[in-house]
Each structure stands twice: as structure tokens, then as C-alpha cells.
Image (cartoon, rainbow, N blue to C red; front, side):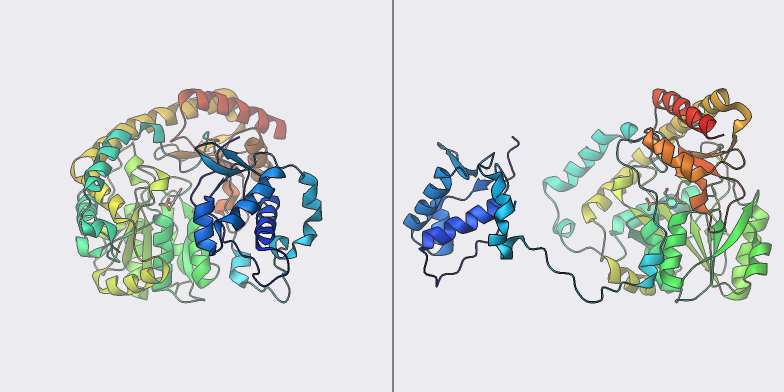
Length: 495
Ligand SMILES: Cc1ncc(COP(=O)(O)O)c(C=O)c1O
């Protein structure tokens, strides 16, 4: 049986003023703790000397209790190594008699009103899938191609003899050198206009959206979000303002005219202009200008989520909307969780300088700061050229994976489905035949070991046609071929 980690031991509590001998009360505590699972089979028990000192009782008391526990098979000693909870408990049936120890086993009674916020009940859940389903998990990059050895060398560099600031609370805006590296990166590569004082390092795009929504908007404020759009953004805005207003996208991105028709005075607009999520188009220059002018006329904000511009293997040269805006109305959001690895949890906001302190106050209300060590490592990773190298390699890999996935879908499913959003990024959309429910196909695919997202979760209104969003970033050739074969069988079966 697996050895249970040593180190933590539950507090031992027993009444002192009682008629039964002390050793028996100690024995009772151990027996109950073992039977209720508070102490687990194989768990190490502190020494009798230590327990006697901790509990302020004589060592004989502890020895007598242990003798009885050992004689009844609850604990076992191993010479030179110590005393452990027995790996198999003698009287499992005794669990049935646990009502003798109500204090230990009763779950707290839940009585009275247990009202939670209406909002938490309303928020639509994300589809969750078990680990291990890589094909075709949305948002999963090629983590097995991540340069782990370079990253660990940089971690070791900062960790071997860490400066004091590595271990202290960090700056609310983020670690200075990392903010500088990011500012340099986004100004050079994405045409964002900023300096390091405007960069706030957060946990990821999702965190950035939440902070932006809380800083810019009040409950009830209308916000445009793309339809279909990123469900995480809908959640973030919904959790602050109430339901956002869906505005359709077409080949040129967010339909600004339609947004103006539906709600001319919206306080903000959320966009993914470089690679619309999930449909993949790039917002046209004309639409970008229209949106910037609308924001200027209305004193509204634009929240620009540039979540995966790094994996744009077509090298489309359109710079960020933030760089076009002369009235500082754009909050730009970027993330390293897609380009490096999702558990990194580092993203950033580029904030108009007059709003920096407001953003800081809101940020502090949620999480204070991100790990300084990881920011220091990321700063070196960017500065020393590893990020640029990794991006170049991943673009080639994602292009190959994209081509293979498209070819396999065409081979297995032909005209049964329609592929869109296949020009860039790490996912594409496979539109299903009319009348086929994407949530049912999604569910059946998950049961067969294939991850995806149903396209309908990206809509607040009913979509005209269902589809599956298939991520290919973290999927190798064999997984693509096997995955499409299984998916094709499920789709054919749903017709
Ligand atoms: C449009 C969009 N924004 C944000 C995110 C999440 O990014 P992060 O992991 O940095 O929160 C995703 C993830 O798939 C996304 O598709």
C-alpha cells in the first residue's frame, strides 16, 4: 500500500476530567480517528515521546494507549522506522457503529436559508472534460514542444540564490523587468502604443477581462460582445454588468452598424480582432476605424483580446486596434498561456495611463500580484530570444497540424461538414449538417475520448447551425488521424 505523506497530524482532543483513565481516552481518540478516516491507513504517527510532550501527559499514558491500539490491530510498529496506522483496519464493520462518536463523524447540519447570489446561479458553466483527452482540446498548445530545459535553466538561475524581492509581495502592476519586456514585445510585434508603466501582469486573459470589466463598468451597463464569441468573455462581463448584448460578426469582424442599432450607447465593446474567436476572421481596417470612432463619440471603451496572435502562421500583418486609437479608449489584453503553456497563468493588460491606478485598486481586491519568480523567468525568456524562437517553431508546427486536420476531415467527412476558421491559430470550426445538435455530438465524442467545444456555447441566442470547435495545437499526427476517424463515425451516426 502507498505510504501516506508524513508531516501533518490532526489535533488530538480529549476531555481531561472524566472517570475513564487517560490512556483509554487517548486510545478512543485514535480509534475514532482511524475509523472515520481522519487518520489514513499507512499514515505515520508521531513518537510516544513527542506525543507525551505535546499533550502534556506521561509517556506511560501514551505507551499504554499504543499498546492497546496495537493489540487490536489499529496501529503497527516497524523496528527503527516508527509507528503507523495499520494498512488494513481489523473491524471495518465498526464503521457502522460510529454513532458512538457523533462529534467526529457528523457532517455539519445545513439548516436555514442558504441563499447564494442570483448571478452565480445564472452564469453559464464551461464544458469540462477529463484530463487525457488531447485531441481536439481547445486552447491546448503543443506543450510537448515547449523548451522545458531552457525554462528550467532560467528558473534555476533565479532560484539558486534568490534576491529578496523574489520572495516578497510583488508590485500590484507586476514585476518591473517583465513589464518592460512585455512592453517592448507588444510595441514591436503588435503595434501597441505603450510603455512599461501601462502594463499590468495578471493571471491570464480571463483574469484580465474580469479586472477590466470591474474597473470600467457598473452593474447594468450595456456591453457589446461578439456573437458567436468567447464564452469566457460573456461570463466575465455577465458577472459584472448583467447579460452582455450579442452583436453579430461577419467576414469583417464585429458588425459595428448592427451594434449601434441594437444598443448605440453601450459602455464597452469586446472584440478579438486579430483572430476572431471562434470563427477566425481578422477584423477589417474599415471596421476597426468605425469601432474606434464609435467609442470616441460615445465615451465608450474597447476591450481588445489578442489571445493568440502569436500562433498566426499566415503572418497577417494587421496590428492591434490599440495602436490605431488616439483617444486612449482601448484596453489591450494578451496572454502567454496559449503561446507557452496554459498552467503558466501569465497574461497582461495594457491600460491607458490615466486608468492605471483604478485598475490597480480593482486588481488588489482580487489577488494582489502574480508570482515574481515566474515573471522574472518570463522576462529572461523574452529578452534572450527564446520566446521569438519558440513562436517561429510553433507557427510551422501549427500550420502542419492544421493542414493535416483539414485534410483528414475532408477525407473522412467530405461535404457532410463545412470547415471554417482554418487559416490561423490553434483551432478550427467544423460546421455540422443542418439539424444535427452539436451538444449531443460533443457529448458522444467526449464519451469516445475526443475533446472539443460545441459551437453553440459561443452563442447567447440560438445559432443557425451547430458545429464543433476542434483544437489542434496539442495534437500529434496519429492523434489527429485517429481522432477524426472516431469523430466521423459519430457524426455519420447522428445524421
Ligand atoms: C478568445 C480567448 N480569450 C482568452 C482565452 C483564455 O486565455 P487565458 O488562459 O490566458 O485565460 C482563450 C482560451 O481559449 C480564448 O480562446
